[in-house]
Image (cartoon, rainbow, N blue to C red):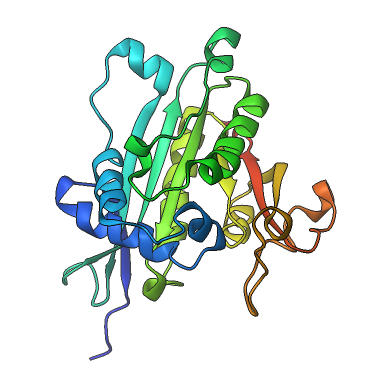
Length: 256
């Protein structure tokens, strides 16, 4: 009998998935140049614990939901022997949904400030603010409080790449946004950019971090710092620069 086709299932994350989510997150970004700068001594146990505690959404009042958005934390399970066999969590994603536009006062008040409480001991908060903080500010200033679904994190286990888990998680989000008639937003890493383009995300802005000038980092052989990403929008990526891209997928208008 022919072997069963591998199967990917997306579902809501449960607290029992915490250890798998934390491992996937830090394994996925372990050799990323920016992660190395944000955690110069490597991700500590304190940082891992902090991430595991804050990745799950907390209960919110109606007022808090309107301000902060509704959070969806999903995992992708891989079933090598088909859906009836044992599964393995191989990827996860975290989405934030703003069903209604926010006022100018509300969105302009958003001010990203990284803290040790959020990132754990051993984190270089100055690098985090220059990188994640600046991406957040660019996203905020472009979105201007529009109602949208925002992808905050997507990570896949390095030894479970090319199974379709990342695509399944992105598909879940774009289908939710389409059902609500809303656009989708995200910040693409150099290696994630091509995946998002396949799902119809368009270039909005870039964050070019000159790692050579700021921190003396040079690109190792075989590494990709986004050299071919958003070139039509922002031009070629200069030497020593790591490019992240602000992206937006327009709302799908129903023809029914």
